[in-house]
Length: 317
View (tube, rainbow, N blue to C red):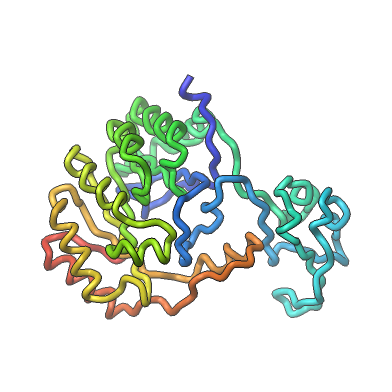
């Protein structure tokens, strides 16, 4: 049965008002083929369940220390003395991710939930039971369910089954996607998707590959095909300093979007922010991430006007 198909989620967020029209509940799935260095949800990137550590919850090894001796791989040791948020001296655990296999033993032992696992295997039926509790809000506000990620279409069986079940229950559906998936998957999702929240990160394919790890030809081609098939879009453009925030780059956006204008309800400009930095730290990863000052209000307004001059409705997210 479709309701028994399993997927890996990492959050279900109720009362979401940014992921499509009306009041929505957004289901976030693990796994993404892109590696955007500014990603505000780095916990979504890996397809597996991962260990996270939140320092502000940690009681320190002197008061707790339950994680120290429970790791079967000896991946946890005492770190150097540090200061907590109140300025007190504290010794935090240090996790060696090269030894950690994300078994979760330390998370189960952590009474403060400073160590916790991100990624939960759930069936479509289990998720649907949660979503139906919010249906009165959907009906009253013109909202619905948004399936997001990561890249939710990288878990196609789960995503399509969930979308189909939503439609059978009279719920408006949206798919938040990078577009970097096989067309055959999108084609299967189309009959059950009322709206695509479609990310366009960069129009230069070489630069797109250099920064995100993948080219953009498939993304653009899928957008054209969705338009031809009668799909609807909210186009989402992350405005990233030194990457795609120039007038010249937005000329390329406008040129492309003019070709699918009749399918685009709105263009959302999503200004870069630093919320992903603390989340990245929780994942205990060593790789560097992009950090910059957010774009100015003046720049965002000028880019919004540029999009609107192309005959498209635009909004700063």
